Amino acid sequence: MNQTDKNLLNEISPTLNEAEVYNIRKNGESIARQVNSYVSIIPKEDKSGLDIYVKENTLFGIIHIPVIITKSGLKETVYNDFHIGKNANVIILAGCGIHSDEDKMTAHDGIHRFFLEENAKVKYVEKHFGNGKGKKRNLNPTTEIIMKKSSTMNMDSTQIKGVDNTIRITNATLEENATLEISEKILTSGNEQAKTEFNVTLNGENASVHVTSRSVAENNSFQEFKSSIIGNTKCYAHVECDAIIKDNGMVKAIPEIYAKNIDANLIHEAAIGKIAGDELNKLMSLGLNESEAEEVIIKGFLK
Image 1 (spheres, rainbow, N blue to C red):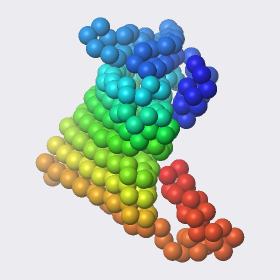
Image 2 (cartoon, rainbow, N blue to C red):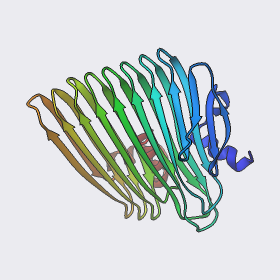
Image 3 (cartoon, rainbow, N blue to C red):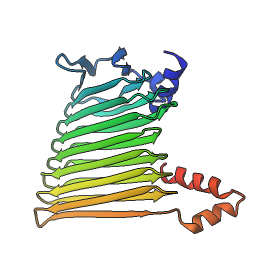
């Protein structure tokens, strides 16, 4: 790998050099892979992608599956399926970094499906990043989540910067006592556009979901956040969308909650606006100029 490769990996997977289990994909091909006794990584035969199997009762397993693209004009769709065994507890670190210096469409569509068996626990961290002189870097992640009884998933998704267009879709179905927590952070600038869509169906009694989206739209960028939560039984859902707009940035929030049971408790909150003046004044009183104060607030907001 050259220095550009290493820089991209450092942005999306900074602890990769400590990994015991990993698959590194570069420019449409797997260039490195390592497994152990509790994780199997098997290339798909009918399409591009992997089947990752985690054995029952695995504790504290960590899996890295970063993707980097440095070839301008490359477009790919990759299908990764994660089969998480009963009582397993794992961390999965994923994401994609694109470096492009040409104005050719360069795109990665990642379709990730998670199948959590009873009482399985997953922390899923996904980072997206783009850099270079090109202006046609597209990243479109789709996440499908099937959660069986008493399983838990914590999903942390971050779009750092440099992604010109993205459509981010997450679909989840939860059975009895399953718990899903999703945290999304997005920064757009220039003329970038980002659309997010969450569709969660709570089928099992006492299933719960908590979605938190924090975003900043700068310059002439545009973001759209849409969430649809369906409660079919006694369940709980809380969705919150908080956004900061700067310059000519625009943010649209579209909530939808559908209670199909008298004991379905579904909540949606949204707040969109500029940086509060009292926050700016407080930092400026410490010697920062307005631009520096805004940067500190945004970093804290997206942390």
